[in-house]
Length: 599
Image (cartoon, rainbow, N blue to C red; front, side):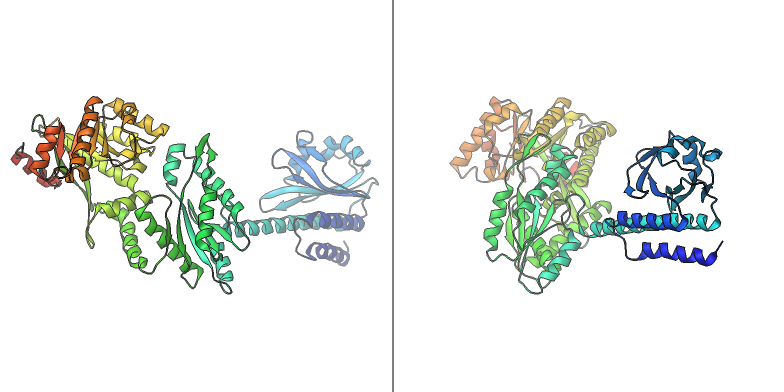
């Protein structure tokens, strides 16, 4: 073999391939040039490049040069199985006479006649890291004795094609990695990394404001509509939000259910109200009309994108403390200290459960007709080793908003049912335990399984468990809520409407729900003996409950006068500091032994 000629020819091929970094758009023209050059170098009429189809066992022509260029021909493996197998173990397939060579007898005469009465051929598999991905074919209608130079050039040509394909794959991988780094895969919106990059660049010359936006009660919507609905809800909101953007505005997606809006609008409040209005139109999800609401945290205070975003997040969290929906809050400096305290509590919630820092207290409930203890309400307490006793009013809303309320609620259920089992073993088998179930937990898919499994584990009757839910949850016109109410009621579990009278539901709705008890809010009881309107309202509630055959319990009873008046009005059960404060488990049995009825 003429080594000098081979090196020159090989160098020519490499120069064609490496002349510039080939893009996917330029690949076809480059392959065409290489096919023409190869045809000239080894003096063959037909040069083609084929790749394997990933979806079916076939070779597809990327380019066929035979005086002109064509592509798209297909060779199916079922037609030429031996040839397809041959490509997997061959460096170069050099054949002088295709009509007599056993290796390609299945290609003769049909394929070779169709290709232009081919007599001689050199094929070389295209090999990449993941194996053989195709083949290059050099064919001629004039019978030819191939030399070592021809075979080496064919192998080099196949390697060059592999190099080009690998280069394209690398470019595509780089683009994909860049997209992954800077864009959200679900919505295709810029992500947090792109937000920082874009915002810092823009803020060098112009004053910008950042709005951190949260989809209100997203997890409750997902729990109610099904877990496949979450992505669809977020995509539809992202699409709608993107259509609202004006010149100079920038939208990014932060985490699940959160968006970042960057704007240089001078009238920020007017622009945000406009966005709020445009986002309120319902959209379809799993055949339901979903009307999402949003909460906004706004900040114009910060020298960097990161600081602006942090202060906008603080503003959002501050607004969510007072309203779980439709809050619009501007950042002020005094929010930082408050935010830091809440952050520390939120970070310690899960750790607190792991370290057994939570405990249940039990507040007794007595029955008016018999004067006996009828049950206890289980109340969660958190005794943090550094902060001290953390008020439930502070950590329960945080647990609800972060989703921690679900595992915390499951712990409460098990501890309370375990306590009922203890009562049973001590001979007090008719005691009922009441547990507050948060809105988020009530519609969580695991709740029925957790309750029924725990009752069975501790051999406790469902009749000894009462689930207290808020009026807003009970009156929700939601198929899942109604089904769950019926499921628990049918199983024998009592259902109580907590804080009754503080919501906006019509009393008449009670007749359609399988609840057993309503609990008069302590605020009505507090002013009961001093306020005739409150007395009339309580009497109305008690009379209504009697007509609907529902039991009534009054909470917050603190004086004998309140208890006496409630008894005269027909209240069935009482709970409050007059009876007892909430007690830790180790004090409960002592209190029960010493209990005296007050009426």
